[in-house]
Length: 189
Image (cartoon, rainbow, N blue to C red):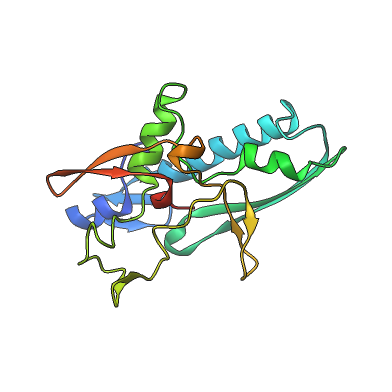
């Protein structure tokens, strides 16, 4: 019997079931789990449609991508896109940012970003965090506010992360029974 269930390797481990690659073996019946792989493929197809057909970055000349497995069997891809016209460097901030979206314009994205993309909290809010060493976060949070994307000293990009005075947004989060106000310095890149 082959069927589809919403299970995960962690759930299989907790319940004592055997988990192997892309399937969950339960009582000698093979039940296929297409949990994160299906979501990844659907998301990639949507991104490629938006890029090639909807031209969100401009008209596409050609593209190339490769899909790889990360640790813990998670998929990721590298996509290279050649545009017919060059993308002006000032438009990069329209596509890349490490910010809380406007809750009135996009409440779903704002909710997801504040629940899934927040680092910590650590520092003065949580001095006992595992990321704290000598009173400083080893992951460099809270990150500095930036009005536009920049290249860091190590060559990696530092994405736009505006303060509330420059048009950024804040959100509140329940942390150990108390409300904590978060700004864009806590959003993970």
